[in-house]
Figure 1 (tube, each protein chain N blue to C red):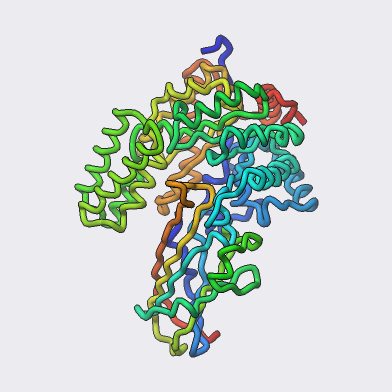
Figure 2 (spheres, rainbow over the protein chains, first blue to last red):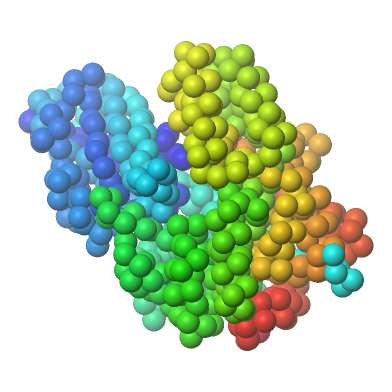
Length: 131
Length: 368
């Protein structure tokens, strides 16, 4: 497990109303979108509304509901995905603390007849730049 | 034990270098060349879904590139690790037909890339293996189901597979023996990683004691027993006020550090087609403190095993402060010394490795 690399340093972007950050898979192998469960994004402790979160991967943008049955798009271990959501933030050169929590389903590990799910967290400080 | 001593083939899985690849320090070609430069071959194992973008869809151009590269650097593809993603739909399991097709695509990829053997996983039942045997046979790829740390060679599910293999009698079905099933302690580097996360010393000592207790009792007899142990480690972390470490500790202690005896592998030895030389770290004396590598290599040699051993370093999960290359180098030195102590040797020559692997698998693969 490589949770310390979930958040790509220096990738916090804002357009004033939405923020985004690049994220890396904390696992050793590619997983399809269907195995990406929930995510949470906070900036300076302010939680980005869950229903505004979007996931961009392989040039496509998904809601988390879209991904439940999506087995054709895969998150490769060396690729960054982009997690974004509604949050008013200015690119004022001030440092911010970004927190990301990510739930993954590990599709070959079945425990008690359920697909094993893991939740991993990362936290990094960085400045926001204009999107 | 057989009269003919085995000469296991030295090799490595790129899984050992997960952090380096994930960290974009090496691309696939760079990593393969680093394996050669460090003398970690001739055996080469790759995890399809880790190293190959778009896997199992490998295009003609990529296949040609990969085979040319492996030939150029004189490595011998020993195993492609493929995954039985039975829970890929999250809310339901793949049907048997879907699973066979899911695996078929990966087996075809293994054959095209030149791997004579595919490591498969425990989510495949004896019936799944029977259904996959004709697929394996038609593509010339042996399916070696991994006996991992949360099982062991005498686990009821493994014995059911062994019995199925004996019924079918095919050279295309067997096991991958993962040394993580027969460890002798939690890795000191994992305990150090917990210390770095400010885990209470009392928690770590109790965790070690609990693991030793289970080791003495023997491996879990079934999945219920394993779940009970998992819960015990979780409770322990909670009792010391560190619920944040609970799942991690439980998964590692029960799911990664198996507590079967080295001798337990004898139960399935005739069906061992591939070995994961799982290990977690090297101490100041250049020994592996939690895996009895010397005993394991001796057992393989004395059992006449001349298949591949892929050094599989798994300490990368928690160890971000040491080079996996230094650690693999030391572990392979232990393997070679152990083989010599057992009056044999490890095969390190590519040509000899190809011949030995072909004879070991007995399927006509790996000889070209």
